[in-house]
Every structure is written in C-alpha cells, then in structure tokens.
Length: 236
Image (cartoon, rainbow, N blue to C red; front, side, top):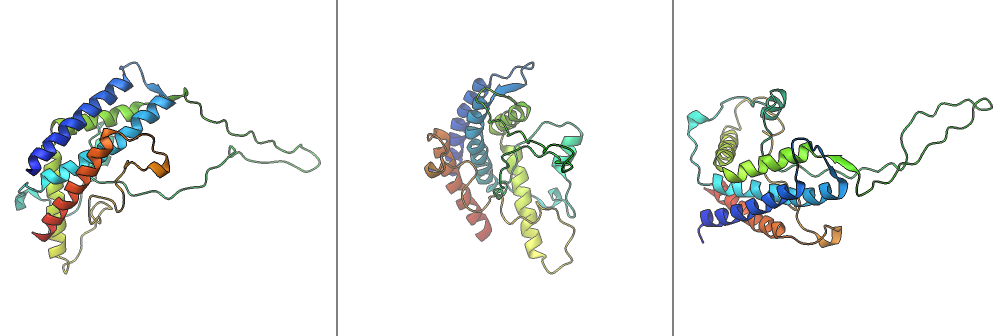
C-alpha cells in the first residue's frame, strides 16, 4: 500500500483518539485542574499518541524536497525558548526525549534538622502523605499538549517541512565534516529524531502499562514506517 495512504489512515485514527481525550479532559477556560486518576489516564494515552504523530511526520518528510536557500547556513535558533518568552502556543516536539535514569525516591520530606543535644528535643520528620486518586492536578500543560497534537494532526505539512530541513542540515554537516564546526546545540548533535530502544509510551505488559489500547497499535505501525523512511533517506 502507498505510504501516503498509510499515513493518512493512521492520522485519521489518531485524530479520533485525541478528540476522545479532549472530551475526557473536558477542560473549560475556568477549569484548571483534573483529578489525579483522570490526569494519569489521559497522559498514559497522550504519550504514545505524540510519539506516533512524530513518526508519521518523519514518513511525510521523506518526500519533501528542501532547497538550499531554505536552510540556515550557521548556528541554530532556540525556537522553544523564543516561543516560551513570547507566549507562543506549544507545538509538537519533533524529537523524542531521551530516557531518564531512575532516581531514588525520598520517603520523607526534606527539612533542615537543627537541634542542640540536651537543650532541644530531636526534630521529628513528618512522613510524606501518599497521593490520592482524587487529588487536583494542574492540567494547563496537559491541555496545551492536547491542543498542539490536534493542530499537528490537522495540518502535519509544516512539521514535515521542518523535519526535512533538519535532515538536510544533518546531511550537509556530514558532508562538510572536515571543515571547522560551528557551535551546535544539543539538537544539532542528534543523529536521529528517534531515541534508541522502545518508542515513548509503547505498551509493555511487564511494566504495568495498563490495558492495551488502539493507540499502541498505531504507535508500533508508525514506528516501523519511520524506521523504513529514515533508512531510505540515509541510503539515497
């Protein structure tokens, strides 16, 4: 089957899933929080949906032709920082975030322990309260991510052009490796928009990811398409 038809089918399925997540959230302008259980349920499906959308953008970028005049020859503009300073709407990230190493969780609240033996009683540290399913969680960031994902699914062409430009700049850097390198950002040092190993949000029964959802099937299919698209782009 044609790759464009496969992408369109997956985009349509993702659009329906994200619309259902927006309905689940039900965030009105006056509502800023969600119960913890609802917030986690939406986030558990939002992560694989974002990862699948990024991979579909990579497939669309394979057929985008980028002219040399459209590439910035030197440096890199911190787009995310500029957007944050000027209050631009959040956009779908084109690169997977790398895995974070597990950190040891503290069981008590960290407070200064100042006491004098014989003069003051030992300071008693109160244990940290366990989270409850109905605790209110700030949903501002979640709402922005849902809006950015819907926008990307409605019009993925600008993201595909951005991805094609990044791939073209990377090929130019590889070809000019013997020249003096310009200052690069962490994004410029990446070799692939995908992180090694499992894609973010992939269903893993052994890790207690809950029940398998349709979005996990879309993510696995989109991941295979993106790997094929990157392989064809590198060998062309």
